[in-house]
Image (cartoon, rainbow, N blue to C red; front, side, top):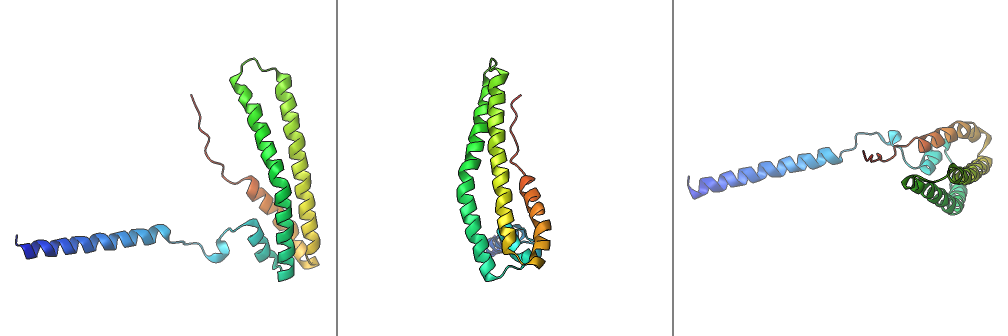
Length: 159
């Protein structure tokens, strides 16, 4: 093969690889979902579904921020309490009473969390118009269910 023939083959090979890589990138990053099918945040879904006006959106955002500021420490405390309880798996001699006490504490904190969430949504509902409240009353249970049933990372099992 002559130098010119090798160069042509090199250029053709390079072009084929370049085009195939571009096609691969397009396929990987293409989003087939229509905008209305996308699941955004709960806040964006509420804005869209309830057709909140600018004032309502601002009130919802402020209340959400305040709510999250209050709830994050409680949720973190619940996580820590659960972690503490399951650390006892390593100790075969942990009395049931210790586990029961930890479970009761977790239950009390979870009850506080659920009650505060309920009150938060009740306050948000009051910002809605009567027409929006009808949709709000079906949307919130759907959002809560979706949040609670979201996929968790797979657990690793040691056998």
